[in-house]
Amino acid sequence: MTSIYIMLAYAKAAAPPKPVLATAIAELRRRGYEVLIGVAETQAIRPERLAVAADLYVLKSHSSLWLALSAVLHAQGARILNPYPACSEVMNKVLATWRLAAAGVPTPRTWVTGDLARLSAAGAIPPLVLKPNLGGRGVGVRVLHDKRDLDGATATDGMLVQEFVPGDPRLVKLYGLGDEVFGVRRDADGTRRQLAVRPGLAELARRCARAFGLALYGVDVIDGDAGPTVIDVNYFPSYTGVPRAGERLAEFIAAYANGRSLGPNGSHRHLAGGSRSDPATTVSQDGDRIRRHASRPSTATVDSARTVSTRRGDRRATVSSRRRTRRRRGPAEGGRRSRRRHRR
Image (cartoon, rainbow, N blue to C red; front, top):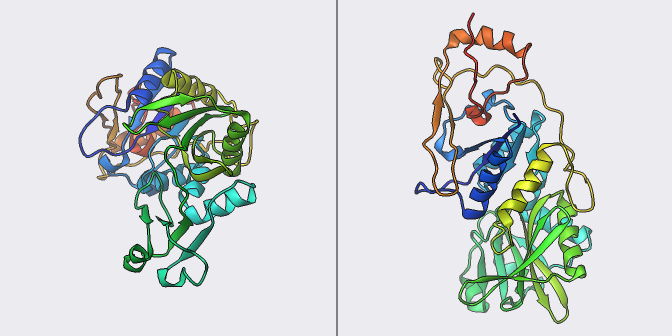
């Protein structure tokens, strides 16, 4: 059975996955895939012992912890959707700005500085948007409406500063699954409604995805009179407002798990799945046991985490059995439940 491990975002309060993702998980299980989920922040993981244990990892979380752990899995040849290098570059706003410009994507004028007092001399006049160098999903973003806001703002560890492009009601969210692009506009009351995406706008979204090597992607565009301007790109967006989003997402993940390269207009630099190294035997976190946690959420609830323990004495048998089987163990010390008890 093909195993898919979803790296889920941390939530302070226990909650089921959002409806789109919950539907996708249920549909994948209906198709016969083993789907596990993990929240890195709720586990105690030894990175030096982390080994590839699933056929496909799906990086849904935008947390720095899951991103760092994805780097370890990527270094061992894990197949990750979206690939780790693509996600890492999207989160690096300085590099992302350069990549988009190199791809010919229209973006606001941008500066990087650790001293905001230098902006005026550089030609940056409010209103401006202040963003952290690293991050995404709008975290830490501020609008500096005038000189008073600019004089009162401080830069921490360098900041990305962009010209402010008026958004509402011209902000369009473009959601991509490979070549398919869907448009959604959010009304004043928060309701999202689907838009027909004209070919030029769809191709702009694909160009953004190709610049990084993304297969599941979101692009925020201000569709102004002078033409569209891209103000943000992110990986694995919410897909809220996309018709049959959960089913479409499940179909895409299933095809990817089966080895298809599904980036916009075919494969590109980050989408080729790496060959997986044979996972080394995972030793315990506490020296005595391996503790592995995985939950199976339905569309409404999350089951309690499964805990599987094995003794240190099983290690020799585990190594021996690996030569006879292709069974793989859990990601982040939290993956597939072994269906066979190994004995010396």
